[in-house]
Image (cartoon, rainbow over all chains, first blue to last red; front, side, top):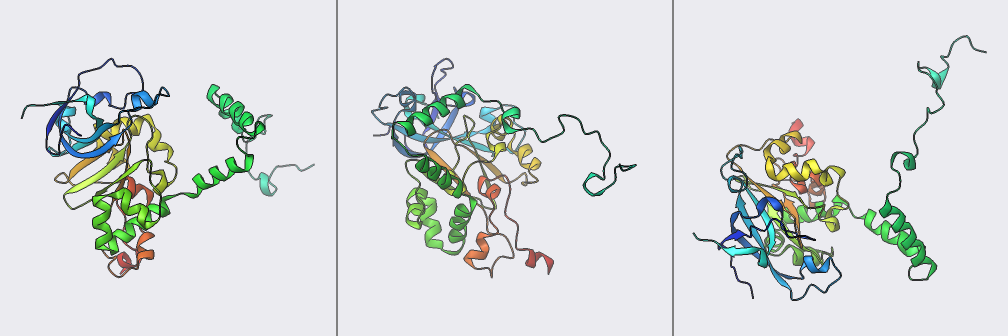
Length: 96
Length: 224
């Protein structure tokens, strides 16, 4: 079961030191966004990369971030966004 | 002996030095550790009978045979068949597999360009790319410059590709970080109303499906 649903506000963990095959880009850590869709459940790449089975599968989300949230000095349009795939353990609920 | 050097192929002025030849690949790209490892592993797998050389060659041939023509066919079908387009946007994996192109184990998300939204694909972490639909990614897609700037200043990157997106159109960058792969469904160009599905497919380029450009209308229509 997935913890978040489309439209939910989330924040990416402020973990800047986790080693290994992390698929959460640095530039979105500790940034707030909105769940765009639930992609399904997939094996954990942080374990798969070390020849483990990656189970249990983790819910994967597409999270939409405003460019100005990611880069406060962003100079493009105010509506411009980046959508990023993030596994559930990297997400916390964010207040509205 | 000729008094000058102007016959045929040598009608140009420069010195012919000892190293005046096209450098061999091995000289410009010396083998890396990983390549030595690959060679050793490949030779062992063949020697032990796990794989045959022909199977390996065939796998490479298959990979090289995939290309943007596959994605272009999907886009042209979506432009001409509203039911297919609806299925494609709802579940790209399912729609494209029914169309006849295998996608799994990755999944496909098709993102639609509209007058209000322009989509663009990048993988900031490595080079994730919809290879089943577009073949191998171009070198620029894997460059650090594209990967870092596409999410930081997408409008500047687009302009360098000759693509000017109006300020009031939302730029939506998709960072292909995990199990999804992305294909941009461009807007059907003006002037293409009478074209067949096959003719439409010829307008759809690789770069338009990555979202760094938009398809041009048919040349005939613009000439009129």
